[in-house]
Length: 142
Picture 1 (tube, rainbow, N blue to C red):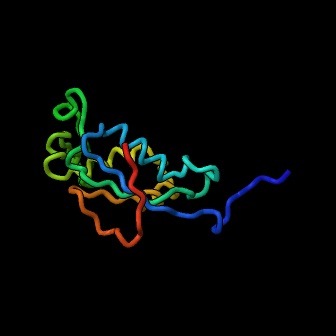
Picture 2: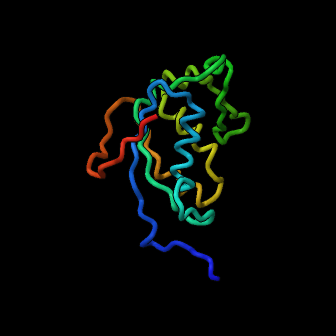
């Protein structure tokens, strides 16, 4: 029996909208990562991009539990010697809440070419509006 490998015809990409208002960041990120990888579909193949496009709205209203707003640090390197910088989740939430959601989701995706392709299918917006109405996205309820 031959193995089934989906072709372009079987891989129908859909668009989904998820409202992050009141949702816990980690639980939201796992849900989004499953949609981006395509693990919710019967045609899921680990080495192919079978996932859908995801739009996250109201990123500024996402919740973090415990003392994470104060204690969780997001680090990055500037590329210069001694250039390790860090910012707390609370400060990142005030300045760029969409980046907070992206970091959580990107940490759950593969760190390969395939993962970078999946990253491009995620769009995160601070408020309740997004410019992707032409794609007729499905609104997913929490």
